[in-house]
Length: 485
Ligand SMILES: [Zn+2]
Ligand SMILES: [Zn+2]
Image (cartoon, rainbow, N blue to C red; front, side):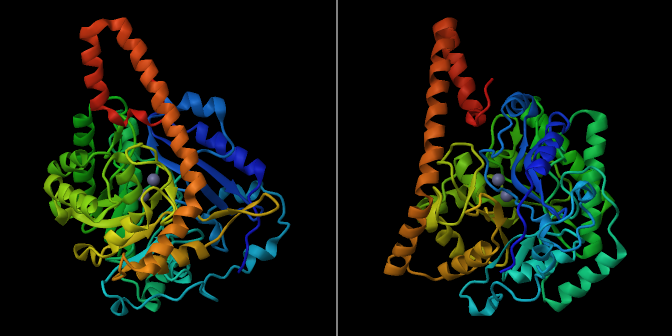
């Protein structure tokens, strides 16, 4: 398979600096590598986090390899004509140009698409692919890995201002959708920009967020796309109720300014200020949305698990689905992000793992694949595909996604008592064992540290204050996310 040249260190540093400069309150934690051809790859992104808490640590430590996963891996790089990448101009001439040039994603697919009628359940599985060089490229990139559904960024997720959707890209998008028989109204799920925080309370910043959000929705409509997924945002330190109200108000405005696109809130796993870690947050936003037909939810399996919603056993999965139904309503569930979790249950860490290798394990995905009400929903992998080469360079291996799609499809109707399933389960678990142990140790250490800190505080405050402090901690149990207060 074609190999891209590896990311350049200097570009990575430049990108980190850019990240550090991201405006307060809504920071994107990402490391973007730009290779010699100007193609860039977001190696790791964690959702909108509370910058005030994170900034200090990030700036000080600035780890070259952050502890996050490859969440929302944006493969901007895949497309050949990366006109979008402003970084291009700054990069020296290519050394291994041929690798990228020859990477025609539509020549030889890594896997063919499974005919949905051949599956016992109509599960549309794919991955978050690149739309670099024009949104139309996402279609070939999806077909290349045998995806029956896919996600993409409609424009650079790291920039506030992007050129308008080019007519040529729009025309090609419609043509390729037809050619590859994707249903843009059902199985394409663009992902919103990480810069946008609809909960922003500052008027100027809220206006900027709204403009970026609305622009994305308008692009969806121009492309015939119905579903649009975004991270709800961050409270910025204000109350969760007021944040939910601000998000709903922005959604109402955006819905009124557009005609058909359905905005999907993604559940999150994060700490204190992150909106959407609890199903109740999603419920509270939806409650204030005027047109309920224009709002829904995308469940990210890794986020749900890390937030404390278990999906592992059939019983736990059924309970979580029942909980979602009673709190939010199953009718709002419109899409899935399929990711295993490198971090343990309830750890509030956002670390995507490859399917079966994480703390969720293969059984969790068997539960999803065999749950009838989920048929027809777009299911999108955001699993890591970066691989370290012997020479230390990192390259993307899209075969991983192609294989994960086939793996998930194979779980439909599979007997979990069968030798085949058990063997697969064990093999994948063994593969992820060291990574799970590493993160488990981090989480344990953090918990220990927090407990000590709490004990110190409590000793100071006396028994009355102690009770109060404990209650507070329970309320923002998300606070165990690695930030100190
Ligand atoms: Zn996700
Ligand atoms: Zn995530």
